[in-house]
Amino acid sequence: MTTLTICSWNINGLRATLKTGDLHRWLEISAPDVVGMQEVKGTPDQCDASAWEELGYTATWHPAERPGYSGALLLTKVPPVAVVTGLGIDEFDREGRVIQAEYPGVTVLTAYFPNGGNKGVRLDYKYAFYAAFIEHIDRIVASGREVLFMGDLNVAHTELDVARPEEAIKGTGFLPAERAWLDRLVQHGYVDTFRAFRPDQRDAYSYWDAWRDRRARNIGWRIDYVWVSRGLLPAVKRAFIQPEIMGSDHCPVGVELELPGQA
Figure 1: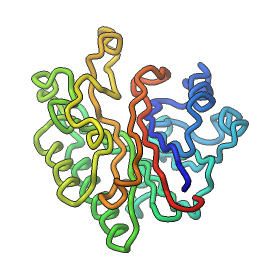
Figure 2: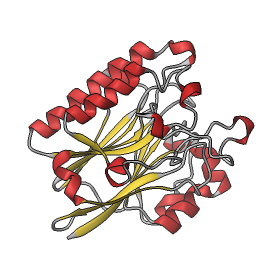
Figure 3: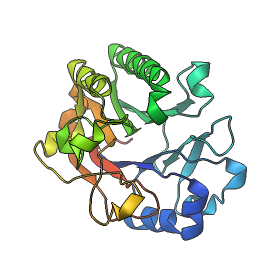
Figure 4: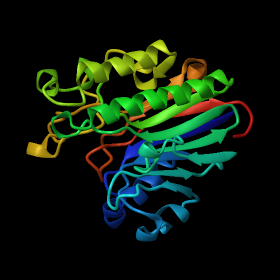
């Protein structure tokens, strides 16, 4: 059996995290085999790759067309069989939101789901992305493959996932229609790995607003996830959140996945 540690981290500006050394320290200490990063806000020519290359990682980029915005990055120690960027839909792909890597027995996707925007101005775009994404992963599962997808979904599922539900419901990220899409994921046979292991845990968050030092007071949201198709769940041996890791207003989340043979 081969055990892969797979992590997701909304880095919220890769260049800044490279300057502080936080990314390199985390990669060195945690040593995940696969890392999906979102909101990198940069391009390969703007970033010093030595932070991961000297630790044995290969990078696959999906930057946004708009400078300093969005963008995804996949770092792999264990080489995938194949890698594809985007969903094949231009209105989403030009924002650099999805990277898909094929491993024996599982398709791994890192995705940065759209924010609803100020006063919900991008909610229609967000819901369209949701629909396209679930159709995409459903096709993969229908082909006979298992799926693991991770990233900043920009929505908290239940009141367990936000410190202040009565405050959260006033803006996007906790609206009933957004949360209903996560219910739909469950109905389609996908599993939130953290909740599979810790169904009732409160105070486990992955994002904290910088306003009024909310991270220090753990007034946060759990909007970063690792989900798997139901058939892959027995291979998930551990699911975790790393709130102690600094360098972004989000922290890494991840799983340990045990697969037969050599990935």
